[in-house]
Image 1 (spheres, protein in one colour):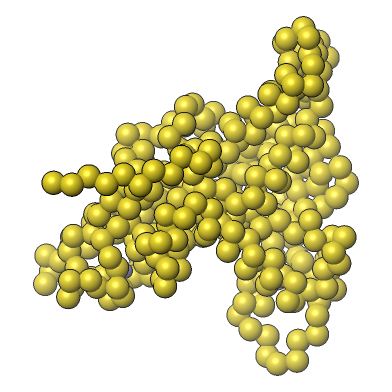
Image 2 (tube, helix red, strand yellow):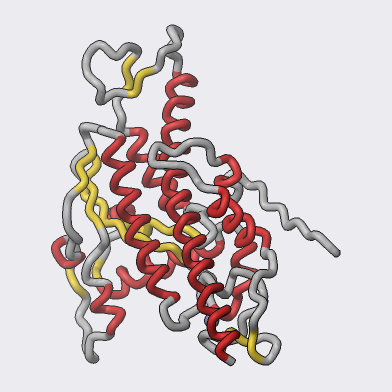
Length: 288
Ligand SMILES: [Zn+2]
């Protein structure tokens, strides 16, 4: 027997290992186990057709969970849609929980054309065009409207196993793709580019840099106070020195709490996608 550990201990990639106590519940043992299986590339797909072919979608699948998180076989993508919705809900909940007076979370999906001039499309409008008419959410910070698009990027079929082990690569490509799509359809001046926020995470739970930056902006907008006499919408630092470092430390811990809570949603949903897939695969293997 042989054990291989692919260690990825960057602060981002190992976030789930640090998971302590999110304010919306903890990771169960089975969620944590699933996260380890995904992150380590542990072989779990046993029933395959022709040695290396997914019994559900018939594409090459390998044996790690990478294929499961990307499989388009019957019923599997539904799990990813649910994951997307739950991540979106969680982000909005943590942003609201910051209770920053300069932040406002709008309800509904904002129309990009309310903000930017649409480019002239000569040929028939494509499906991609239709899906990019609305962002997922609008959040105002200090008077600026930010248009968020949530994305949990799975590995592309072509680079499946490698992508899932390269920390942050999928989130980065998800960010780039989204920004490109919006700019292809709307005139977005450089001065407004920062208001287009592709809030992307890897399917493994690693944050894209834009998502981290956006949460940081939210956390930085929370007012600071040395005492809590005058209301609860303030970041309270109980150290009497109250220096810049303590404020930075308090903000940093809020940021990590937010991120842990969002990552936990991704990991919980991944575990149910894995479970669903393995159940279907077991069923289709015994059918044959
Ligand atoms: Zn498949």
